[in-house]
Image 1 (cartoon, rainbow over the protein chains, first blue to last red):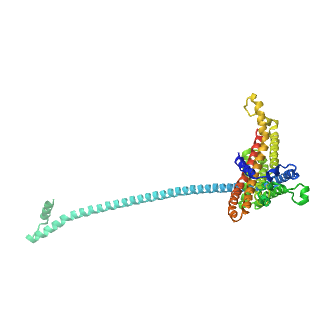
Image 2 (tube, one colour):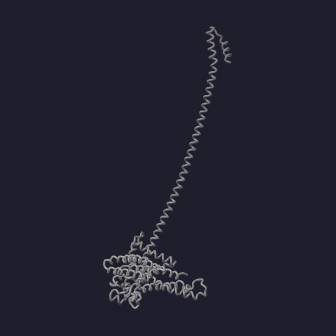
Image 3 (cartoon, each protein chain N blue to C red):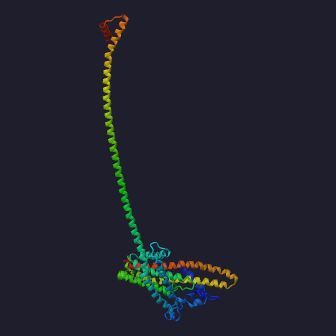
Amino acid sequence: MYRTPRLFLFAAPLAAVPGRAVAAGMPQLNFHDPLLIGQVVWGAVIFGGFYLALSRFALPRVERVLTSRRTRIQSDLDIARKAKAEADRASAELLSARHEAAEQARAHVERIQNEARASADAHAAETAKRLEAEIANAETRITQSREQALSSLSEIATSTTQDLVSRLIGTQDEQTVASAVKRVSA
Amino acid sequence: MTGEASVAAGSTIDALGQFELHPVLGHLGEALRFSQSPLFMLIAAAVVLVFLYVGMRPAAVVPGRLQAAAEISYDFVHDLAVSTIGENGATFFPFVFAIFFFILAGNYLGLLPFSFTYTSHIAVTFGLAIMVFIISILASIRFQGVGFLKHFLPAGTPVWLAPLLVPIEFISFLSRPVSLSIRLFANMVAGHVLLEVFAGFTIMLAGLGAFGHVLAIAPIAINIALTALELLVGVLQAYVFAILTCIYLREAVAH
């Protein structure tokens, strides 16, 4: 299959070559030539040496380099994988620590907020109580003042009436005026 | 491709001369039967080993270009062996690696001028294929015992078909090293003969004077394209050889 077209090519010039060459035949088939058999013996020796040199020295050397490269790459990969695992673990630790800190901070803020709210509420309640007390106080005072004012009102009215009456008629009867004022104001 | 040098100056093209074996190192090479073919096998093995050695010398965690190339070569063949053969693939990985790069380096070195393509010799490719064949038989006996012989009768076959099927399976089994070796050999020979022939055309046309010089551009262009094709074929054939080796070994180790 590999030689068919080439054999035609091979045959063509052979057919074209006249005379001497064909008559002499192929040197490869001249088995009387001691050199022909000699090359087979030499070939066996040389090939044997070649095979031994390859299998003992040359090929194991290539194999060693390839193996050392494979193990080197493998160990480098292992180191890289280990480093990655460590980095992953550190990153996870960091994440959880951050999460924890955030939780703590939130709780803290909440507590402070609650405290502030409670204290503000207490403060407001106290203020309201004080204000209420003051309001009640003031109301009492107002009531007192009003009552005072109301009680002094009849006196003022009586004295004013007495003055008016004495101006008008020159005399006065305190009793009468007082009762009259009281009647009117009642 | 040493053939360019040996192209006859006249009217003939010696397309096969490039495959001739010549002793190197003078008389010593002659005595040791050491031709340029084993020389290039040595060079190929050395190139691959040096490539791995120099590439992996930094042993860096982040590889440079050469180290990345060495590691890709390793991973490519390793994946091929393990995914095809199965859990025992790692055992045969160095063998498959050696096969793949021995053939690939041979194919590619052969494309350099003045070099020699040892994978273009049937003796060499058949030797490699027989080695794969024998190793897969040994692996079969090692992993399955004599039970591996039951592969010659596919499971679920009616018994009365056995006299027909067993010989067929046996012949196809025996033909494995033949097809494995001829595939690689024929591909490499074909490619190099083509390169030689078109290079020869260039020289012949150049001998025709000014007009021929212009025409000679055509075979050169074809040779450039053929070289690109040979680069593809070189790696493809090495891959085919290696993957067929893996497939045979998988059958051998399968339970």
